[in-house]
Length: 417
Ligand code: GDP
Ligand code: IMO
Ligand code: MG
Image (cartoon, rainbow, N blue to C red; front, side, top):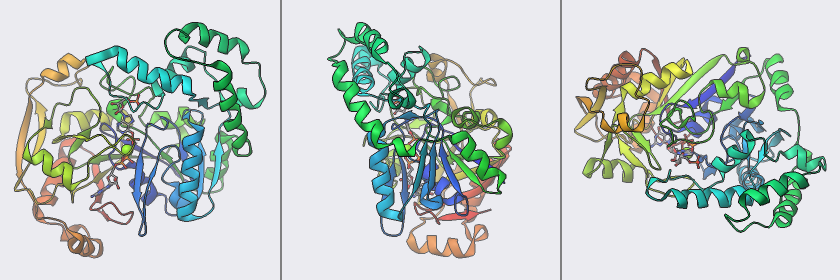
């Protein structure tokens, strides 16, 4: 009766959606517990490619999804996701926690405004209202789904919002409330107790996939603050954000790319630019699923991943995009930062000044569709020896098993080691 958590070990976009959909075959429930519509989880099915923002991509396999209270709920995005998903896979059951905090046009407007105010120091947010929704939630000024549905008197709250923000951005409280009430009514039938639902699935022997959003280095506490998101993104967040205890989580699968990407501003020790970065970006279509921005590219970073593996108590690593990194003569692996040991540097300044020490390794031949087919059939042993050497070096450096290897965007483009 396992609870399996899937978390990103880098700066997001590691392939959590595809990995979750893969691991959820045979599972009974898919749960989102953090983040909001800033997430973009893309899964390639035989007949289409789906990008989901509010629903867990694992629901492609389970047909049953829950959104915990830890998620910043954007109802319009969720309704769009449901329509997209149902068109692709048929009816999907969705349960939403009444305690989820709502993202309203006020928070979305503030997100853009605060970014503008920061000028050159902007975070590069997805502008989905995440930071301001968190600001309201933790300042005890948030609006939850249940407050809107139960007809609670939110007049005083909105008055405070007006006094705080009325002079900052255009804000019409009646309009915002009317919009939110209308949207909340559309999801009234989906509201339910996510915590009990998960327990029921686990108690009856089902497997539950907790699909994380973002990545460890974007965690509000552990990440590269302030260039982070406004959620917890590590495995422990699965418990907090869905309403279960730590004992409901049995396996932690950490997802990392075979290289590193980051979208948005902030330090990135192994970032590269030039022809190799361009080849990886174009070959891998490394553009954000939520904003379309080009993703920054870098080599795989062992100090960063060691830190992430530790924070998440990672049991197994799913290393995606070994195919995207194929076809290069040489590849590099950052094994340490010159003169820097543990703990992982805390400040942006420190991270901006670290000098990665690289181990240069032999690359492996291009993994194209024909090679992918062969690898799917023949498995790990058929992978080119240079790729195996790279993966084994990663395992050795991290002290954590690389159990799954991604060789393409399709759900079944996976080698199990
Ligand atoms: P997420 O946010 O962690 O779910 O990741 P995204 O969906 O934003 O970005 C990952 C992209 O990589 C998606 O387009 C996936 O389809 C794709 N992907 C995942 N695993 C692999 C892989 O092993 N190989 C290739 N070529 N693409 C992959
Ligand atoms: P998934 O789940 C990659 C980044 C933004 C920005 C910072 C803060 O698809 O991996 P926010 O809108 O959250 O206030 O932006 O975090 N970011 C992501 N980067 N993948 C994501 O989600 C992200 N969600 C937020 O680019 O740098
Ligand atoms: Mg993404």
